[in-house]
Image (cartoon, rainbow, N blue to C red):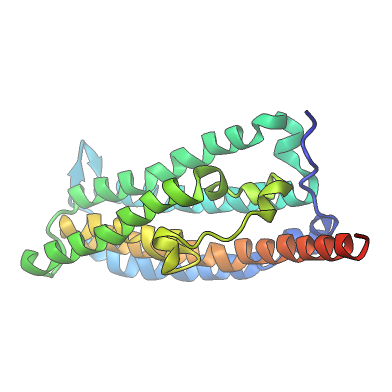
Length: 245
């Protein structure tokens, strides 16, 4: 069965492809600088699994940046030209998931590795950091459960960039999505804070804060404009269909 065309003509313009990406770059540079201000002073003399703490930090930053740049490239080329759909047909989301999910899984892994290499550098007593870390873990885990149970992994991959049928699905209001329409960015990333706090690592906490702030940069600069375009087009289509019914 032939897949429905996911492309939107408005997304084929160069000015849309690069829309807000200059701001993306500026905010990324600022966040990188702020993260290093807090992480740098405690790095340089630790290691875990024979990997230096600075390497854990660099990989944690680099893979997060790589993921968000790939999301921009894939989502914008999908909206404009259906690139992955043309390359992989009905397996386009499988191909995208095979790239996206390992990078997503790498986030807590590298924060944990950094936290182990930089353990106990945070100037907060364990009597405070441990309960706070456990508290933050609760909404993070509940959000991950809500994504699996209500939202679905396919939609979390950005399926509305691949399947026009997904664009007609109702908003999810169950589970953690009762608290926020964007529960994944609001609450799931608190799990990264939790790792850093439980291991009392200042560098890991700095990396967690960087990744959490940077995902909101991604949302504002890439995802929000895409959603506006996708669902504005859907409303026009629905209106046109209603006028002809």
